[in-house]
Length: 262
Ligand SMILES: Cc1cc2nc3c(=O)[nH]c(=O)nc-3n(C[C@H](O)[C@H](O)[C@H](O)COP(=O)(O)OP(=O)(O)OC[C@H]3O[C@@H](n4cnc5c(N)ncnc54)[C@H](O)[C@@H]3O)c2cc1C
Ligand code: FES
Figure 1 (cartoon, helix red, strand yellow):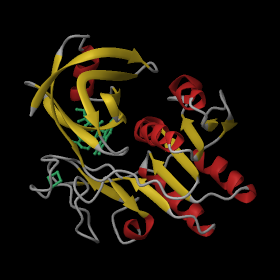
Figure 2 (cartoon, helix red, strand yellow):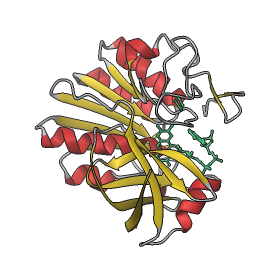
Figure 3 (tube, helix red, strand yellow):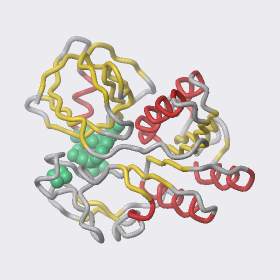
């Protein structure tokens, strides 16, 4: 565990902030760090900026993330990592599909892919326009961004998977990458598979140790550890994870079933 200070805070949306930390990093997009706030908790967060000063982008939604939202520039946090397997850039034409707070690791991937001369299209979805994340950031580096919102306030009215179905009718991609609500990712996997496009999926499970020791993040079906063999998995592996798109486990190991938003 190292201690670092918050260098900069950017308000991205009403409930989402990016924290640029003083510590520098050279990580793979899709890797995560364990962030510790003394007397509160330690939680896994994907790197939204994976080179130079590390950045995390966080939705305030519970005790830990609400506390993080109260911190100011100069405050200290504990850091472990980066941990886990990140995304692998495959082919020349990449399609990214991100929902809500699943967009941060995909934005890091887009940075890396564009720097490597790849053509990147990103489908970015949110409930409403003000919740859309990193649209300007992605456009500014040369990503083609297609937005969608549940309420139709920006881009297509509907889900990322509606936009995905549409674009896959007209265009071909070498590889698809997705991060967001698990039911969305399940549908992305299905749609991309129909077109023969391999997909890389970033999974979220309750992480405790983060380094493959405690076994808490083991998934049913394959016995893989999300913190070690993941969080990014290939489609062929995800298909064998029997709980994918069905349930995850909370801190005590109790199954929590996903609910479909449709
Ligand atoms: C690999 C990975 C990368 C993540 N990256 C991001 C990110 O970039 N931005 C972001 O905002 N969130 C990210 N998360 C989720 C983040 O860890 C949870 O939002 C955070 O733990 C919530 O804690 P809380 O105390 O604020 O809320 P809680 O009330 O404890 O939880 C809110 C939600 O987060 C889930 N959660 C709580 N603790 C954990 C945990 N230890 N591991 C996984 N899920 C948990 C709960 O099941 C619940 O659905 C990531 C999770 C994982 C596993
Ligand atoms: S969180 Fe301990 S093994 Fe993954």
